[in-house]
Length: 331
Image (cartoon, rainbow, N blue to C red; front, side):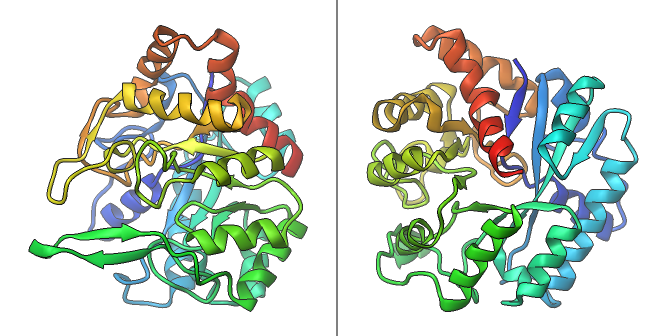
């Protein structure tokens, strides 16, 4: 068993620490994910996202993301004996042959391109191989789902089936498909996901999204989306965050349990087949009461899947095979 995880926010956490004068390393730290924890969890590949919150940065998004990218390369290249940065599927195979883990560079927030296709192409040239079109804010490309204010300062996320991709967003997904940069619809609104299907032909992913029929948060995919993604040959990564695993009352605690993750897998398997399920932890990008607290805890998920009747072949497919199939086709 070699874990392939489509999403973590560890690079942003490292950058913020370094910016404040800290010296936290990707090798070993007190975060949810580091190289030693990955080794303990039997990781084969980790997607490292360059996460950018457009509402909280004090500089142009492109410039901010370039600093995150520098952190990624500085940290990962310092430990090239343990992990190799990949730009093609052949790199993944070569790292495996050498007994090393793999790191795939992703961006979480298409707004870092500031609507410029040249910025997108330059990110590709710098090694970015996956990108979400949005995070939680509208940008030049697309829109997230909406928010409805509740009492007590709380809010409820609501689906947005009206605002599709912008003209620039359509140009971006077409260019990403041409380049071989994997389109990631995690965080994209319902209308935007519809438009990605309309304007692309190849598989794409929802790197850290669960099933909306099991947990009603609109960050999760509807059954219709799951079936369509499976038919396209894509894959969705189970997100470990409690708020996307079970419905939580306003002001309630976000509780993440392995059994809930498996419940989502069972539903998705029934709707779209085992071949559409992967892993997308969201390590270092979430909080709450977590049963899988770090990357070292992944064997517990495999044990629970086995206890609930998943075969060894199904577990291997979810943990690695399904995502690697998509990477083999697109990278």
